[in-house]
Image (tube, rainbow, N blue to C red; front, side, top):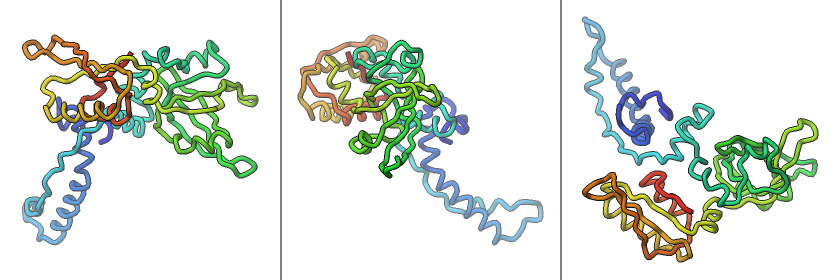
Length: 280
């Protein structure tokens, strides 16, 4: 349900819609099955085989029309069930901007091309709390980008100030020192600080572009304007809008908005348009 097993029930439909509706209605389906079984138990058997009257007599609930899954939810469901991001990667939209964000690809660290104190943009795919000899909490993590994965240690003194930011599936900028573990000879990062990905992009973005889908509703544009008006900053906003005459032709429009990027804006765009934003 969370991945591909039942996509064939709705061929041609976006999996974000198919899987959301199946997950939203699974409890109703189970309840109905229990009622049908109970009805069959209480009914008299049919001389010619199974009695389907119990199926017809059970009042079925109206199906729930669920909010489509976001791309992030779709990918995290794949990771939960399959153990890997299958149809895409949550870090893909940031990968081409690593140099602009002054972050190092994990593969460069693993291959010995980068060392010392670095910034690494990644998603936490494994998170484990630990206790040291003084009973103070610290944690070990594995973070991942599109090029590889690496272990990260957040020792007690640092963990005390960062604990509220660190959790499975969090996408963060990790600043720390590259070390080689004495026992395993494994390359690791000893964490010194973390920062939110949105804050990192906001500090680097000079231009922010939103790709408006064809036939995007008017109320959606009004809501988008609301999010754009929430902050004032230096980042110039551009819109890419399909031509009414030829949807393949895209008009790039510079708006009069200068904003400070914020999480609410990015989440609204992703939830209603998909990965329809970029920056430079």
